[in-house]
Image (cartoon, rainbow, N blue to C red; front, side):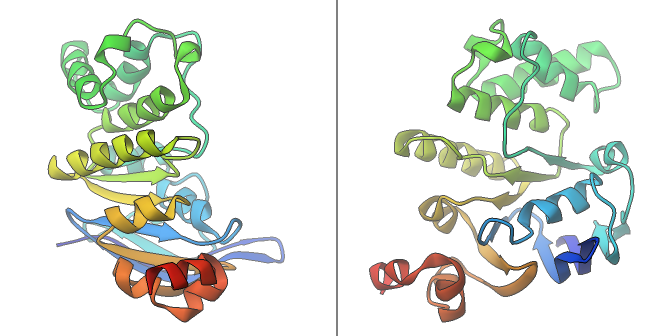
Length: 243
């Protein structure tokens, strides 16, 4: 089932075309990766989908409903959650209350929000940190808290902007396993990531951006063998290693 459809998605900043007529289709229950050099337009696309930025061209459909240029809270209510490149928890608020704020967006009352919060903290392996303030968490814990806050909004599509940034190899593998578990919960994942080994092993399909344009789309194997992608982003070392 088609969940998210971007058609000729475009965004200009003055004379700079940050995103140029990008077409993407994401199916329910898949993990879809988005890669490309810094400044290629990846986070801009996330900002357009989530309502943080307005389009200058094209359209966005979620579950066949037009959501182009809706407000962020309206998009969140429809079932799209996201994380950000830099995890910024409420510093002087406990982990529990950080997640509860997200849960209250979906829940009809405080009791339901508390149930969602308990559930999400367990999934993110943060229950034992529930009374710790956000500023006292380690980097991997902050990454999981950012993820938990978004999960608490009960998304059907979860957009993750570099969730593995700053993590060591062991922590990257732990995050990968968490994301696989989240997919098994029935949540579709749209992920931007620069840790190539992780995104190649996680994703069902991957799209590649360069200078705001989509230059390739396919399975991880197809992307790794695409000379245009290798030249623009992966580098000859990746091609040689994978050949």
